[in-house]
Structure formats: structure tokens, C-alpha cells
Amino acid sequence: MLALDPAQIEAADIYKLMIGMIVPRPIAFVSTIDSSGIRNLAPFSYFTGCSSNPPVLCFSTSVRSGPRPYKDTLENVKATSEFVVNIVSEEFAEQMNATSVSALPEVDEFELSGLTPLPSDLVKPPRVAESKAQMECRLNQIVSVSERPGGGILVLGEVLRFHVLESLLDGYRIDPVKLNAIGRMGGPAYVRTHDLFEMQRPK
Ligand SMILES: Cc1cc2nc3c(=O)[nH]c(=O)nc-3n(C[C@H](O)[C@H](O)[C@H](O)COP(=O)(O)O)c2cc1C
Image (cartoon, rainbow, N blue to C red):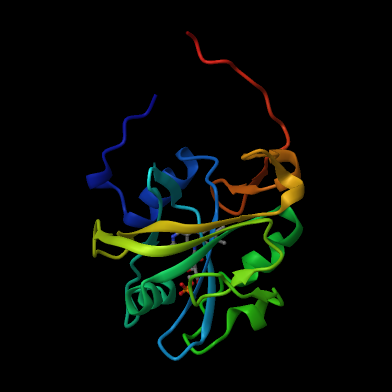
């Protein structure tokens, strides 16, 4: 077993270790708008839930080197305090991937990807109609973990509204096979979520 000291490793290589070890990662497909109403879409796999009461989730936007260190998603959340997390199914994986291009802030990423905007109930950013499960969120807090290039700025949002396709639901349980969510691995690899097994927790 190799022991690696992050202090001796370039940030780009630490990133490879992180995304290779922390697998599979769910994908928050985040819709936002800027202060003039331009729509933005981007995937974030540093993503998880962090509270159920109230429901709060978080995703992390990395800091870039150069003149535009912050991602448009972060700038938009700072400006409007609202966003939607759309769960990504295999059926629109390629359109999701198309939105991860480094587009200028004035580019509408719904138009760029061909995905369909669907009005939200409580927030201004639209949902992605192709997504089978979406969460409308209001900003809870922003935690700047590190402002260095490759550092992370964590966005926490309270879920104000869940939307789930009815055919996926048994009570409040979501059928994972019908959801057909994909996850992110290291490099360009993704994972499907069909190969399930069950374990009961010990009493
Ligand atoms: C599946 C996937 C997951 C990604 N996860 C992250 C992430 O967790 N954090 C991040 O900063 N960028 C992540 N990216 C890259 C961003 O999506 C990309 O930088 C995007 O252009 C940001 O868009 P924005 O500037 O419109 O916010 C990911 C890309 C893909 C395809």
C-alpha cells in the first residue's frame, strides 16, 4: 500500500485521487439564473444530502485559476439565493455532459444542450423537464473551504419543494431502477445504478 502525502502532490493529481476514491458520486444537475434572467445549467458531482430535517443538500464548486475563478453557478446562487437540483438519468446523460463546457455567462445552457425548461413552483430558476426528480432550493449558506485554485466552495441549499414522477413512487419510496440515475467515477467514467443488492441493518 502506497502512502501519499497531499502536501507533496500537485493539486491536479490530488483531484485525480479524490475523484478516483470517492466513488460513485451522484450528480447534482444545477439550474440557476443570473440577475438579468439568463439561464444556466451545470453538473456537480461533489454532491450529497446533509440534513433531512429540514432537508438540506450541498454541492461544491471548484475554484479556477485565471480571470474568472468562480463558476457561473456559484455567481448566480450568490446573486439570487435560488437553484434547482435535477437528478440525472441515463436517458439525458449526453445533454447533461454538454452543459459542462466552459461557456460564457451570457450563454443559455438550456438552449446549448437542447434540454427543456419547466417552470418551478417556488423559485425562479426553471427545472429540467427531462429529469424525473428535481428539488427546488433556497440558499442556506455558502462555505468557502478553500479559495486556492482547485479549492472548493460549498453551496448548501434547503429543499423547498420535491418533484418526483408519480410512476417512480411507492408511498415516498423512489424506485431506483425506474429513476435510472447515473453516477460519476474517476476520469470520464460513469456508473449505472441497476446492479443492486440488499442488506438489512443488524438489530
Ligand atoms: C459529471 C460532471 C460532474 C462535475 N462535477 C463538478 C463538481 O463537483 N465541481 C465543479 O466545480 N465542477 C464540476 N464539474 C465541471 C462543471 O460542470 C463545469 O465546470 C461547468 O462548466 C460549470 O458551469 P458553470 O460555470 O455554468 O457553473 C463536473 C462536470 C461533469 C461533467
